Every structure is written in structure tokens, then in C-alpha cells.
Length: 358
Image (cartoon, rainbow, N blue to C red; front, side, top):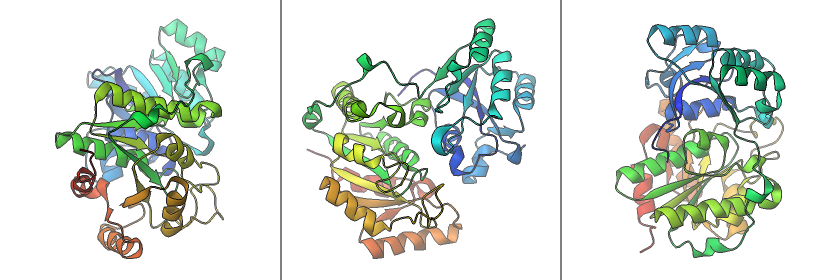
């Protein structure tokens, strides 16, 4: 994990905050070591506290309607932002055309721009020229490294002798990264050495030390990059446990990223994140979400490893529905079920501690 922030960030999430397409912004306002988040942009929630909108817990990060109003308000408070971070995570990872006006304004203000989308800002010569004039930087997090910097699978993963756990999901944008981060934070607070392996752009933006960006990596090197991140974390940190962030789900028609995690990360156990109110795969109406039993069985068949717990995503649920939903999942699957975002990770982490290798 980073020990020094890159700067003070305004997070752009126009028309997407508090929706699955705003998950990068959600991750940043909940936790990041890379930036000090000073504001969020989404006109729908102008004036609201971003933490209260997401979790009913104020975090002091206000939402503004646009960049101009955010920058002016922060300046009046004596806060000088340094970064403009794209907090959008739309299906396909494409940059909305409407965002380009705000990016141009951000560069005009002299703000560094970080984006994790597939449309690379650094390929736009108008933006590049403006960044040079204003002495600021553009970082496209999803730009694939040169091939000579990528790693091919070697089998070194078999040397890793600490507990490896994968947090997979029954769908994309379902909270896998948030659950993984909460588990790591909880274990660290309990004086265990835990490392997270990030597999997407948001984990990088949160300052995760060991990270690869799966969905923009050249296919031949995906397994090797996952392995390299896990092995590096094990060699360098000597952790008690490594938590691997999942991507997509095994049966998501567009994001079947769980296969690579199981094949290359070779976890000892799996935790499965699930949103009971979802009936179809996110962004794909008509594609039925496979049941928990079907997905648990698929994980077992593919990897030979057990799902040891289910973690609940309480989207579209009232508070009164959460614990009964956890109880029902346990009755249906025989597995303990926890809502770690709502109630914390203590019970789940107590279970994980029993699995630690001696």
C-alpha cells in the first residue's frame, strides 16, 4: 500500500454516482491511499455528502454539479486540488463524450488527469498539448505496458505457502473489490499480515501495491501477471494471507474474469459476493443471473476449491431485509453469509483466521 498520496483529487462521476457505473468513484470515496479525495462531481446529488449517499455515513466529501463549482468551492476553503480522476466505470469502459469538456477544463486548471477507461486521454493530441502547456500529467491506467515488461505464467505460484483467498462474485460491479479491501483492513487491524492483489483500475487508484489490470492485459500474459503479483506480494511482504480481488464472474456473458483468477491465482478458498435482488447480469437484460448453487458448483468443478462463505451486496434492500437475506442464503447453501459493508468483517475474518496455514 502506498505511504504517500499523489495529491488532492476531484472525482468525476457525472450521472453515475450511486449506480453500478460509478463503482470507481465509490471505491475512492470509501478508501484510497493514492489521493486525498476533496470532491465528487454528479449533478444529481449536488450538495449531498458522498458517504451519506452511498452508505448513510457522512465522510465530509461533498458532491458538486460540475468541475467549475467544485474548484471554486474548494478554492474558497483554501484547498488546492491537484488531480481530476475519472470515477466512471460504464459497461465496456468507454469514456462518455460529455466527459471530454470537463477533462479539458481540468487540464486548463492545471490539474493532472487520471483515467481508468479504455478510451485513452493521452491519445488525444489536443489534451496532450494542453497538458504540456499547463505542466500537468495525463495517466491512462488501462494502457497496457510494453510486452517486454509483462510476465508469462511460470508455475512459481506453487511456491507461495501462505493462505490465498479469492473474492469472486456472481456478477460484475457487485462489490468484490470493496469486500476484499474490507477483509484486508480488518485483518490488519487484528494484527495479521494481509496483502491484497488488485486486478482492476480502481484498486490501483486506491493505492494497492500489488496490482495488475486484467481487462486490458494482453490475453497471453493475464495468467502470468496475476501470478507475478501474488508471488511478488508473498516474497516481499511475507504475509499471513493474500486476498485476490475478483473480476466479473464465471458466467457473466461479457466479463467472465473469474476463470483466470482461479487458474493462475490458485486460491486455497473462495468467498463469493452476491446481490440477492439481482435477477439478470448487470447491463445485459434477458441474461438470467445463475443461482448461487449453480455458481458455487461451477467454482468447485473448475478449481476443485471450496466456497467457504457468501458475502452479501445489499443493493435495493432495506435494512430490515439484510439479516433475513443472509439467513436464507445460509439455509439454501449451507454456507455462512455476511454483509461486511454494513456490519463489518469481524465474524468473517474469524472464520478466515481458522484457515491460516501454520
